[in-house]
Image 1 (cartoon, rainbow, N blue to C red):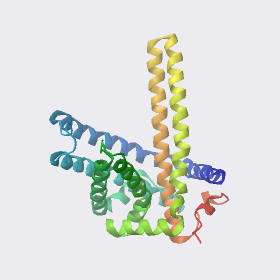
Image 2 (image 1 turned 135 degrees about the horizontal axis):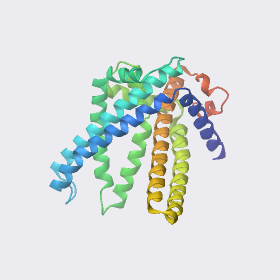
Image 3 (image 1 turned 30 degrees about the horizontal axis):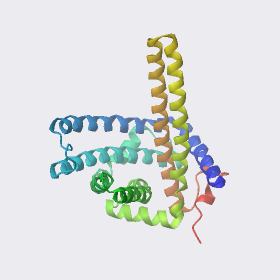
Image 4 (image 1 turned 180 degrees about the vertical axis):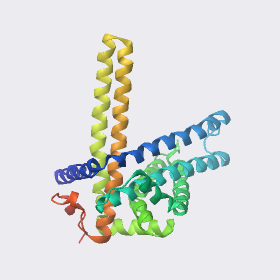
Length: 277
């Protein structure tokens, strides 16, 4: 367990080094978040007005849920592809711009929509399983399947960006690369997630304390401090999203070429990628 934590910390530091060399990569998660909020607002008003989920899942609710998932995944996958496309340029020694990343995503727009449809279908089915109020076992199965799906699809975006193939083939290759290189360990995803989970928890607790202390002085100061703390927590989320995208590009590069970019040389990450014997 200690070794895994050590490798995860090395991974965060190495990914941060890549991100420090091109902070413009953080714009992609920001744009993704703004676009996702727009999609959420578009669907939230009619959903609450029509009370589509007041009595649980129905046919109409499932269709709306699918449309919401499709639009949300389309936005998220598009900007993830843009981030990974720009990150790959950086890892190869180039100096990508925002337009370079967006161009990489636009070039794969058809495949992105196709994969978004697959992801939306899976999302609706998993949400239906996890929403079973009276069946704990079914909800646990749904949660387990959701985790497995997340792990299996971790490399879909780098595959979509790098290869001129369809979404189904990209999904198959993601599963194949996952199994062949680092299997069930999932050090990258779990390591970065755990590290930022701790950082975010600490930031939230510190924010609450600061707001309480500021409130002792004045209500206006408490609001200002609260807004600044909220922006800080959101910045952590943006940073995590950028790091995860960079790492997925690095993992894909290593999986297909068995080499690490210069920013990762000298770390212990290679041991995490060693194939199982």
